[in-house]
Image (cartoon, rainbow over all chains, first blue to last red):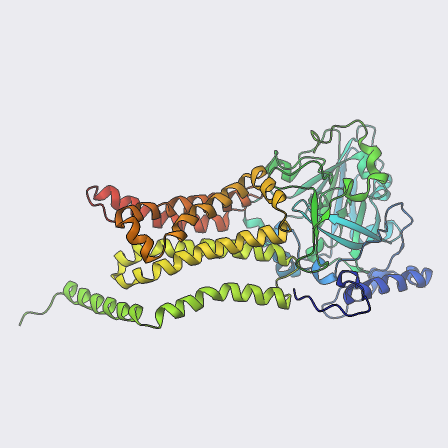
Length: 324
Length: 224
């Protein structure tokens, strides 16, 4: 807010100084990567959490193209206190306030529909299904703000391949937890519960689409979608369902929760697209949370959230204004 | 010995209560105190911005809070006349102008927060946004509808216009209330999240409905 007098020797602009929390988180990640195999050999999820703090969940540097953006990380505090998770309330601070009671063990994800190997997956077996990778993704919310979050997990494709979709499988639907006992937000009729989301099968198979179990080198906090969530970095944040309990493989395109609630405002694809505005606001720019203070200029939003080189070919020939 | 009826007693108690409340409202310190209290929300928001306690998205917090406070002051302003009638605290009338002007003031703060923090004070971006987004257009209309009221709020303007015309002009605040409500409703519409909107709608419905009811019940009276 207050602009200090400029000293003679040009110091770096305040915007160029990495906040301490960001710097520490990044250093922690780098240290993890440096330790490499030694840390990776430990079953991270088996480590006991010290009082109130999520247990460590180390991963190794992802080799997937585009999986490690160089943007500054969002401070952990912001990423865990400013959330949309309507099952815990519609205010951004509700999830952090009310998700603490969510029981994430035992946890089962049921795979069903057009697959040769349907059945329940225990969270412990999902944690062992693929090698944990660190990935740093941009997250663009449809509301016009964005974050940069280091996730821990692996490509959704790993699970998809294991359950062997049949030739009929064209779409994947994600059903998230709707438990009235644990989720006070379910009392409101903002959406039809449970919250459902969906992807085309080829989108789900894209290596950037990930199942995340952790963030910032630790197990996911409940308000961020523990014990496992989807992260699809080239789509608006609401496409990335939290606290998933069911994955269905379907022949027909499923209706998603937001599509059902407001079909003129939210489409099935919901790819980040600065050229297609939301009916009530522009999507051309975004506010990066925790960056550069109150009066920072908004930054331009990138096509497919900056992942066009990786995912653009999924949509060749499609009219993205119609399929928004 | 005849005892006074229960009704007479309670009416007496009520009128002495009203008298003491009126005396309190007429006290010289009441207006300055209300003025200071009305600045408190702004002071807290500025403090929050400086101390960085407005959460992860301080710009959004400032824009939303200033809008909330505009609506709250609007409700308070509209509550003055019904409250006077219900309670007999007629000295409340002294505070109406102050509350009305603070409604306008917080409306301006709300607009400046939007224009500055969301639009970076780029005039063509602001104009484009007003043209493109119905809820911004309605919010802008609500603010502009208060402009003539704020401009004619001082005594000389009141005398120049004459009581009748002045009052007719200032009744447009009912339109302001409906526009402000529509602005808030539309802002929340995409998320089907109407709990807060419903609270303000209920308050404004009571305050405007009471006026309408009185008008219909006594069609010949022309007082406000």
